Every structure is written in C-alpha cells, then in structure tokens.
Image (cartoon, rainbow, N blue to C red):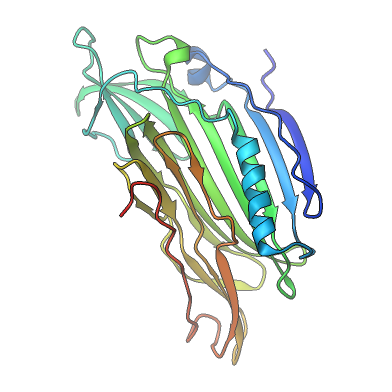
Length: 316
C-alpha cells in the first residue's frame, strides 16, 4: 500500500479568468485497522483564486468565490445517518459525540473524542470500565481553497477555507457505514509583502445528524501574531452558534497592533465557518477583517471592530 499523502492537483485561478470547474472528488473508505494504525493516505485538492490586483468588482469577486468553493466541494460531503442512536452523555473531555451501542454489546456506549488533532474512539460503560477502540489521525480526503483578496496599501488579506473528512470506525459496522467527522477551518491572514503579520483561524470539529441537526461542534480556532505585530485580544479557540439546530457555525475574533507608539496600525479579524444538516458548508465571501491607523501604543489604547457571523438557516 502506498502510505504517502497523495496530491490530486493544484489550480491557480486569476481574477480576470472564468472559474475552472474542479474535478469532483471521489468517495473514499477505510477499514478500522487502517484507521487504528493511521495508515490511510489522505487525498488533497488545493485551489488558489488570486484577486490581488483589484481588477474585478466586489460583486463579481464574491460570485467567483462561491463558484470556486461549490465546484471544489461538489460530491465531497457524503453524510450518512448515524449508525447508532446519538445520546447526550459525555464521560471524556472533548467528546464530540456519543453513540448508544446495541444491548448485546459488552459496552453500552461509544464516544468519539478529540485530542491534539486526533480522533479517539472509546467504548465504555462507566468511568471504571472503558477501553480505547480506535485512533484516527489522518483525514481520508481534504479540500483547501486559498483566496487572495485585493491589496490594501502594503497589506494583502488572504482567506483560506479548508474542509477535511474523517471516517471513524465503530464496532459492528462495515467500513462503508462508519460515521464521518468533518474538520472545517477558515484562516484570515494579513501579509505585508511576503511576511505574515497576523493569522486568525476559525475552526471546529463537526458531527452532523443527517437531515436533523448539527449535533456537535468542538471549537478549535486560534490567533497568532506575525512579523512586527502583537496579539491584543482574542476569544480563541472560538465561539459556536446554533448547535442542535439545522445549521451551526464557529467564529474566532482577534485584534492585533503593530509594535509602534504614538500611532499604530491595528488589524481586526472575525473569521467563521459553518455547516448544516444537509452537508452545506458556510464561509465568508468577503475577507473577515479590517485595518485602521489609531493613536495608540501597541495594544494600549487600541480599539478593535468585530462583526457577528450572518445567521444561517434555522437560526433566529
């Protein structure tokens, strides 16, 4: 078996060109033994859409971004109904979802737990009676779309939307019936030339009850300052909205200031990413950030502006 990560392709899409339709990703499966030993190759599809020259209006740019993302994700989300009943019991920290196993099993529950970017499956009856069943470290497929927005003076804002699909083995199932977990992220990046000034990432682990609700999100966002900048405020790992309803999302806010006094350049970011019970992915089509010059000393006296994510279907 070829154990290397396989790259399907990379496409660069200049802003002045029409969107190139992206090859539909096939569905991939893995068996529990591969999952446990973390040997499953990941299939990666990358797309770059470059609007940095500013030669296209906002409306057209947003439409091209939507077309790019829709093409990249077509056929990628392959949700199934949960194989066992989902129950609201959590023995382990960072439990994403718990299933109730059939009555003839030795263990009553199976929980998918997230720790250090790895999925663990525990079978358990209580705190004194459990075992580790499987470990999943690699996605079976992933899509990444990089959007380079028009330059703002010396700054270039970049948004990176990524979706990774994990197949998680449970006892008593064929690999084709294993439940899926999705990791979604949106990186809001500020560059000065080739130097990264700030990285604010909204991210979360999603489990979907097909056609019913976004059953659970574990927020996993972060905020990191780059060249010449200090991190002044953030809500990382993020805040989620709408869990238990038809659609939900996670958002991370962060504010940065340049290491300068008297006047400083302030960067604000509010990236978010979401999903609904039918497998639709939601993301910003405009760059979720703002830049300003303020009378402040690094973070002292600086003010930050964050926008709330737009309501998703089913939200009030």
